[in-house]
Image 1 (cartoon, helix red, strand yellow):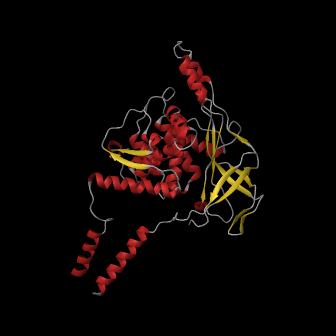
Image 2: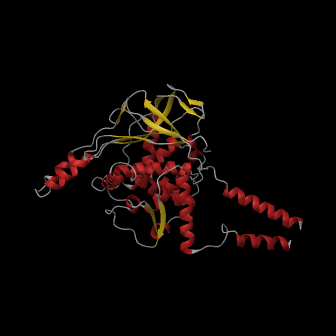
Length: 166
Length: 226
């Protein structure tokens, strides 16, 4: 009988382990953390994926009356992806992620920061279709490139800190 | 001893996790579990669902359902090539990264979705890299993506005109991304005895030589893979 009981307990234990998740998104409490870049970057300059860049917090971040991040704190992040500008007005994109905020786990942060260049496809495609009846002319719009992506020091990025998430 | 077996058998029957589900229900359940795990582990706040179908894949020029209605469609033909959870996660992670893109930008993401389709070479590379990140964050081995693509994507003669990158280029870029960002998966390589992974290694010797050269010189230039 003891063996039966032991087996049952072991089974329950293993079942509980299988269902234990490493996250729990019950809480809706979030605190915005506003950041701006320290040194401006441009998709056409010598930047590369994986490059570390620094941001700075633009105001104190508090939660429950406690200071979480002080104003002026340097926050390192990484250039996750660079999409260069393309034909037909496709804009360039710089995606920044992996913000390293002291005392905050990455699993408690939400918000990937994307900066796009000017999207000229909005007028390039109508122009292409308008010119299509004239042989070969519509294809010339292929040569119009999209805008470069530039992260200026005036651009404000917001990532959200969920303090009660695991 | 008999009692132990009886109890164990009863528990197995009562527990849906170990119940013997077969066919479409099993596949849909497997797809759902891995798909939702990828979404949760990556804290993706955009809604999307996973649908397993026996239909054939539509022609490539139409907008994928992952971009229009945020449905990740798993076609049976491709599913047949999936053996491990890593490979299924790879298949889903690729589509998730496209679907996420369809949520950004103006007109409810319609323009971005169209651009993913029209400018697919650039976004194909981006989606491959994001898929690697998603897999790692959800606890899957990103080398599964290499195995999955190596199995399922044909090698065309060139990619100068087409809307897709050569598969060998995609694989080389994914391998490079893993080399720099998640080197531990290559150091403790669980796929070293996998025939498909070995086939990738065999067919990517020249590209891997270029990567070795880049690492040696510390260059930040993009490699022109073959």
